[in-house]
Image 1 (cartoon, helix red, strand yellow):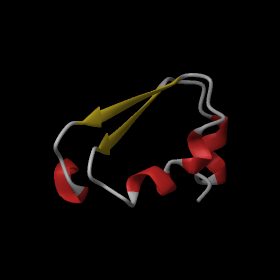
Image 2 (tube, helix red, strand yellow):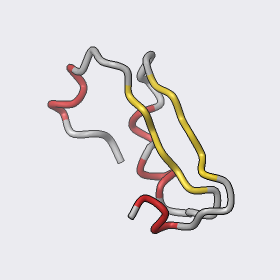
Image 3 (cartoon, one colour):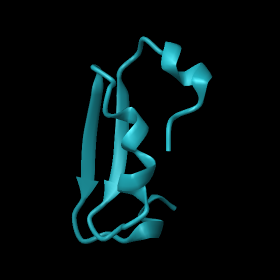
Length: 52
């Protein structure tokens, strides 16, 4: 899944949050791998609804 086209013009750093036991979030982040200014933080022991 690619990010929205308007987001590709972002020049700011991006923080990606994921949960250790979430099988959906990693696929949703595929479009962000090209970003130079990104950081991925994985919440240990958390599942899909950890961000709620």
